[in-house]
Length: 322
Image (cartoon, rainbow, N blue to C red; front, side, top):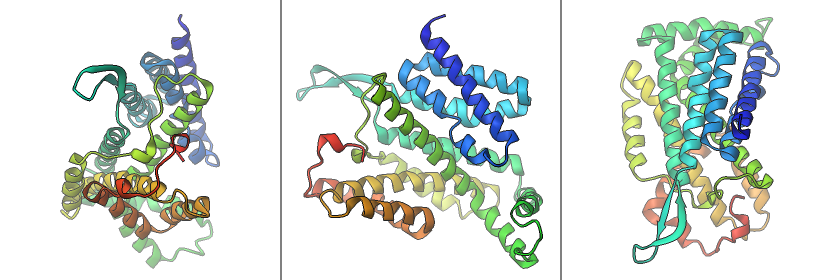
């Protein structure tokens, strides 16, 4: 068997082991789940599409044998298939055209902005699927949330000394409204982080099959503005339709947060205490929802005003992804 297939199979086994360990270890569940896609992304970006396909298939089979078909289906839909599609997109290339339309001999790789948009659509679709699985209608969806919440709160507050009945009712309402968007943003963050980390590792090892894109130049295509606007409007529709649209709107909002961060990275070049400034911005986005909205508005404004083109700082090539 060729090396890239062996690498893929090994990556799939590691990914399945991480997923299975998260399923049985509550203490490490979040950390392990966040890294499940990393071995597959490493195999795909370093050894090609067939490697990640073999890895995803091997991991899904192992999951079916170890934890059952339901766990295997969840793994395939949320980790293996999205990772394989996104790696496939990243490895897409076509001959670059010269100034007069002639072939220059160079390759034009799949743009990072299109990749982020595609990942956001996947996140919205998975969030919508989660809503439908929790309840095909709004009432059954809220009933599922109400059934799950006491178990979650019991783990956080075994003595019932923190969460009063009034707080629990308020949490049910907030969680029912925010869960689709929160799920979409979390999934999108984790998947893109795994892709970025895998790309960084294979580039450092000399195994990269493509040059890594300049993330400072991230441009989410304008077509996704219409998708975001439509999802945002639809999120106010009552019932399941509004809940599904909330997930897509949350994912698209995060895509524009990333574009806004790219603008901030460009404008902050040459600024004293730049690492501290960027750390404050990232921490603020994590802790303060309104700051994320401001950064997303900055990202939405970029195509209209050409903010990065107006920057007085010229980005050096050796700092492309800081």
